[in-house]
Length: 378
Image 1 (tube, helix red, strand yellow):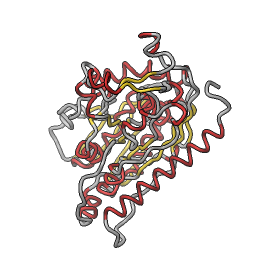
Image 2 (image 1 turned 60 degrees about the vertical axis):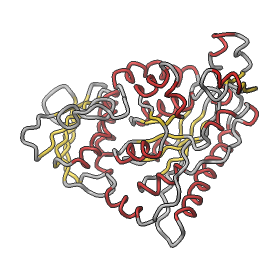
Image 3 (image 1 turned 135 degrees about the vertical axis):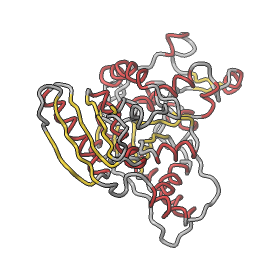
C-alpha cells in the first residue's frame, strides 16, 4: 500500500528517535482512577509519563470497569506539553468502553479540565482543532454495534496475541484478502473491542474519488494512504494499520488468498523513520467471506475503481450477492518487530531486511492458523 520514497540520509533516524513521542519520560504523571459512584479513588499512582505509565492507566481503567460493571473515570495530571498531551490523547478511545479520561495539564492556569473523546482528541482547549483527517467519533461509536455483530456473531473471529501490543504508537501490518476490505474493518474492531485501542487504517487513494465512500471511511477513522499521512499519525502516538500487499492483496483469487504477494516497503521505511515497532498480523477467513473468482478490469475503470470483483454470488445475484459469506475467521497479532538500529548498512538494506522479517512473520502465522482451522465455515 505504501512504497517509500528514494534513499534518504540515515542521519535522519536518530533525530526522529529523539523527538518521537512516548520514547522517553516527559515529567511526572499523577493518575486517579475511580468508579463513577462514590467519592474515593480506587487507584492512585504517580509515575514518569511514558508509554508504560499510559499502558498502566489503560490496564487499570479497563480492569476496574470490568470488575465493577460501572462507568469509570481516569483523572490525569501532567505538565502541559504538546508531546505529553499527544501521548495522553491515545487514551481517548477508552470512552467507547465507558471510561472517561479527564486531563488536567499543569502549567496552563487558564485551561479547564478536558475530557478525551472516543476519537482520541481532547476537548478544547487541549486540542481545540478537529481531527486533521476527518475522524467523527460519534459516527464511529454509532457504527461499532454493527461491526461488533459481524465480529462476534457473523464471522465469530478468534483473536490471539493482543497482549503483545505495545503501548503508544505502532504500525499494525497484515495480509490482505477478499474482494471487499472487510479485514481492515475487523482488524480495527478487534483492537477496539479486545484491546481498547483505536486503529487508523490507511486506504488506497482511489477510494477518495468514490461518492460517499471516501467521506465515510474518513469519518470512521480511515486515512488516505501516503507516507506523510502515516508519519503524521505516528507522531501523534496513534496505531496505524496498513496492508503492504496493497491492491494486489484483494486481487487474489480465493484459491490463492493466503499466498502473500510482494510487500511494499513503506511500512519498514516508516518504522525506521519514526522508530515505531511493527506488529505483524495474520488474518484467515477474509478470503472466503468475499471469494474472488474473476476480475473485470475494464468495467471497473468505467466506474473509477481498479476492477469489479466477480464472486460466486456477485453480480449474478444482484445486490444480495454483495452480502459476505459467514466464514470462520482467525486473527493473530505477532510479537512486535523493532526497527533495526543504524549498523553501518545503508538505509535501503535495513528497509529490505525489515520488510522481509515482517513478511516472514505473517507467512508463518498464516501457516499455523490454516493448520489449526477445521473448515471454512466452522
